[in-house]
Image 1 (spheres, each protein chain N blue to C red):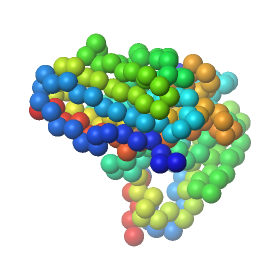
Image 2 (spheres, each protein chain N blue to C red):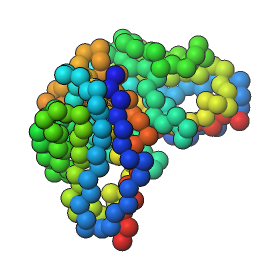
Image 3 (tube, rainbow over the protein chains, first blue to last red):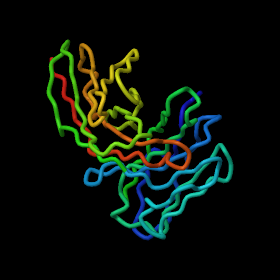
Image 4 (cartoon, chains in turn purple, red):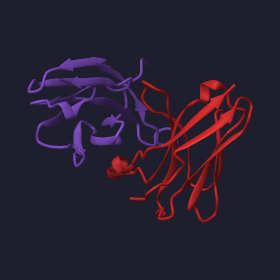
Length: 116
Length: 113
């Protein structure tokens, strides 16, 4: 398996623009997570899905952020409008739960977002 | 949610054994202890997970005392490539608790030649 795939790897945009980050989880995994990492706040969980259904979005900073998972192989994280404080690395991770006797999240390479 | 405390940074030399201890005084009965490793510009990578006593895999060992209020990640004979940030996480991770893992600031391990 190719692992978790994220696109784009880098995104530079201007304040006020809409940004869409994409994620393809590992095939067969039924959990998908979106994280954000900054130097100041570390790695924060934004939202996670189970079987394409959002389970907990309490980490989503505000209404400007939205996430969808239309099917088991695709998820998006959208920021509209974007602000400079949204600049961070956004990671997507997937997990098969306890299917291997332990619970492991597989992280993608991340999308580095810069909002000017 | 169980809070974890671990050293901000550690230094070591190649070939040495490194032990990173994590404190989690309010760990709950159903909580597991998980360690992740993160290299610069990469996502975290799972290292090991345990509930009690000792767990060993091809990469590391995890020691958990009987009271489970702390845990120690042991990396045998580290190399320069083990320089990374190591996160200790505690949570039950069952069902709706999948998102209960909190990545703190981690321990930045620097391995020197």
